[in-house]
Length: 429
Image 1: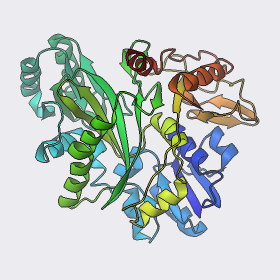
Image 2 (image 1 turned 180 degrees about the vertical axis):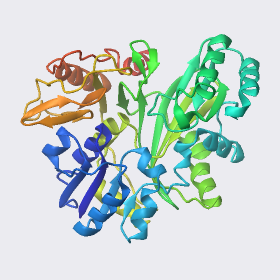
Image 3 (image 1 turned 45 degrees about the vertical axis):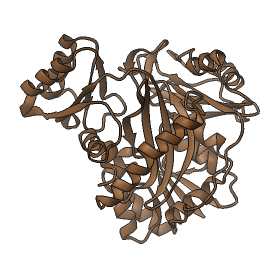
Image 4 (image 1 turned 90 degrees about the horizontal axis):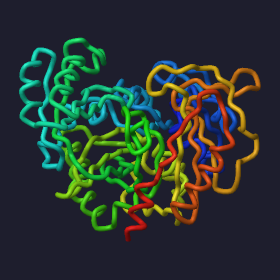
C-alpha cells in the first residue's frame, strides 16, 4: 500500500516507525513531517490543515490509505473530504470528532448515554455569573475546561474558589483562549490516578490497543501547569483486567453504540482518558486520535501489523479480528525546550542524535524538530520522545533515561519521574 500520514509531531513519527518494514507498506509519505520522519519516510511540504492540498496529493499519487494524526484536521472535516474523492482514510468525521473538539458536546453525550464522568455544567460567555455560582457550589478544588481545542492546555485545576473565579473570567470575559474558550465546562475535581484506554473503530466494531499512563504536568511530582504530555508508559499497570473489562462495558461499547445511534458512526482511533476513582473508572476526556506521547509507547507493543490493522479498519473488517501485543513494557521520556509550556526558543541545534539506532529496543521519536541543511534543530516545545521497550517497566525506563542523558540542546529539560507511579504500584503488590 501507498500510505500518507498527516501531521508533523511525535505521534506521527511513532506511526511511521510502526509502519516502516511492514510488508503491507510499500511507500510512506508524511505531511508535513519533521526531521525524524524525513529519515524514515518521505516528507511533503503540505501543512496538516491544508485539506485541499492534501486530498489533491492523495488522489494524484494514488494513495491507498491516509492516516490522520492531529485533531484539528479531523474537526475540520478532512475525513469527509477524502471520502468524497473515494479515498480511504483513518479518522472520525467532523461530527464524530466533536467528542474531542467540543468538551461541552462530549460531556452532554456521556450524560445522555449513562457513561460515568464527573458532575458538570457548561456555560457560554453570556453566562459568567451562572458559571461563577456553579463553581462555588462545587467547592475547591474545581476543574475549569475550555470546551474547544487547546493543544492539551485547556484544563485548569483551580485550588480555590478565588482561583476558579479568576480563571473563568480570564477565559469567558478576557478571551484568553480565543474562540476555543467561548464555552467552558466546569466540573467536580475527581481524585485518583489517570490512565488511558485506546481503541480502533470501524463504525461498527472495534479492537482494543494497549493501555497507557500519561504525565501531563510539566514538573516532577505532578506539579506545575498542564502540557501536551511529558512522558508515558504502557501498559498502565494500575488498570487490571477486571477494571479494563469494566471500562470496556461501561465506556467503550456505550460510546461506540451511542455515536452510531446518533447518526455519527465512529471510525478511527478513540482515546478514552480515565480517572480511576474510589467509585470506579470515570471518563475525564475523549480524544479523536492517538495520544502524544501515548502513541510512542502503545505502538511499539503492537505485535499485529499496523498497516494490516488500518486496512481492516478502513474496510470495516475489524469484527472478530484478534490483536496481539508484545510482552513487556514501553516507556517514553519527552525532552522539552526551556520555558515550555510557555515561551521557548526555536532553531537550537540538537546533538547526540546518531544515524544508527541508539540501542536495541530504543527509538528517538521526533516531535518538534526541523532540518537546517544537515543539522537537526528544535522547532517546538516538546522536541523529542525517547522511547524504549523492556522486559518490564523498570528496564524500559532505564533504557529511555540512559539514552536521554546522551542528547543535548540548549535549555533542554525533562521529568525524571516518568513511570514512578507505575513502579510504586508494582512494588506495593
